[in-house]
Image 1: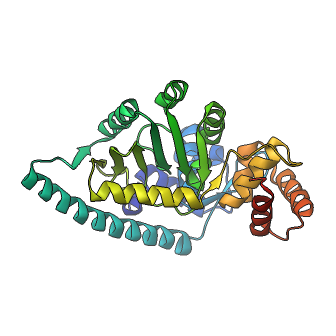
Image 2: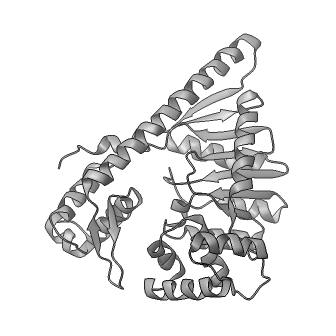
Length: 316
């Protein structure tokens, strides 16, 4: 197997699946599994990861069939994204280095760097357990260990406030939207914001946890940030994201049922028709028919206008 795409986050097996799909107009996981001499489930998981990276698209229909996206555009987009991420990490690393040096001079420990997925997971649990009033998060793929957060349900029951801003890409991961809807029912305040570039968790105004890279193919490193100018900056950034994000827990007023309100929130958040239909368990045809009805009800020509009008009416 070749490994020429590893620098943009594609592992060896996923690259082999992508190359096999490039030679076909479209294929199912089972068809590619025969060619690659492995299980269809393994190929299916690889195709899901390639879909998240924008390298393949899933075709409409009840059967799972995928088609490759032109590498000239898809791979170039990955390269540009990775370069921008590295630039941001480089800038963050410089700031962290200054704080690290300052902490050594004044005896404080404003920034601690932890290594490995397990250490990151343990710190995320600890951050929630030590929070007294509120946990705020920016959530987006990829995920180091699991998409689920087993601590939150208990913490919500104990009276802790959770406010979460999700990237639209997170809602496309299997089971994530169902988990969010369940947590919203338990009290989480959830919003969606396209273009999230970082993952972040903040406990009260006392400590934050931020992965230093979204590249999970290399060593996972994260910063634990305590009271400092950097923590203030991260809190301000989170608050800005929260103000401009669209709510997922839309109010019940208005003529829309719960599914239509959720569909409207997902439309405004920037998810594609195929992703929305998949998350709601509809066909793309059904989803587009309901969208057309919604546009007619609102007197809107497109999803942007629908979002503006619905927000003005208090539907989202």
